[in-house]
Amino acid sequence: MIITIANSKGGVGKSTLAVHLAAWLHEQGHNVTLADCDTQQSSSEWIREALPEVKAVRLGNPNEILNELPALATETDYVIADGPGSNTETSRALLLRADFAIVPCKASMLEVRALAKATEVLRQAQDIRGGIPKAVIVLSMVGKNYRLTKDMKDAAAALNLPLAHTAMTLRQIYADAPGQGEVVWRLGSRAAEAAAEVEHLFREILPEAYQSKSGGRKRKTGTQ
Ligand SMILES: Nc1ncnc2c1ncn2[C@@H]1O[C@H](COP(=O)(O)OP(=O)(O)O)[C@@H](O)[C@H]1O
Ligand SMILES: [Mg+2]
Image (cartoon, rainbow, N blue to C red; front, side):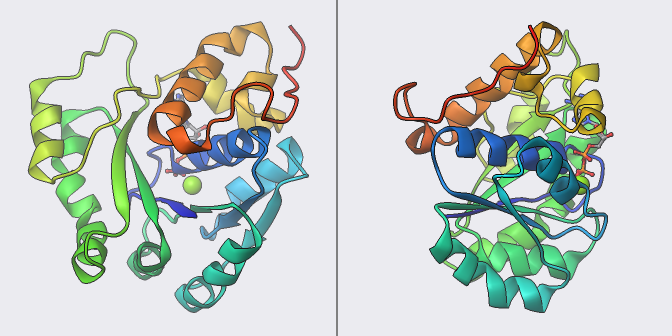
């Protein structure tokens, strides 16, 4: 299964989501490849430090993506493709190959208003491919007291995109994690809430990937 993290805007939490999802799937016992399709290559560097067991590849342009993603998908259970911040053709290539697209979106009205534009290429791909890739919006960098407003729900509904119930909250620990070369659930007790949140999110959006404790790999939880 090829999962792409897609939003044509930069700085919305794509790489953070991609690395955590790849690590989580690995710990569920799946074979995972992280395909870093952003020229900044931040997610492949991060995953190499955090989980060297996860295969990380860099796909530098749309042709490489279109040519190489299918083979990667036959070699591993999940390919997590981290998308670029701005290159439309790279996003298009990813969305023409992906089975599932996760669209992180900052939880502000400005970002939600821009969502139609940010998901234009997704809609084109779904149109061409008869509804594939299936997609879900995940609200990211959500303020502590934020409540899912009607505007937000309406915007998602207007685009015919489901909105995950679980959001990723704005927390310093997410911003600290790449510098530590770790995923949040390995950063001890101060990351406990973030760890619980991502676990909850991934179980919600990928229920078929979740393995009950006995099925998954033993998880390192870091210093407590
Ligand atoms: N939930 C969050 N809370 C706080 N900071 C975050 C969160 N998610 C991401 N960040 C930080 O915001 C910046 C952009 O996130 P990133 O995942 O790199 O986005 P993108 O890949 O879409 O450009 C990074 O510095 C990252 O550490
Ligand atoms: Mg990124």
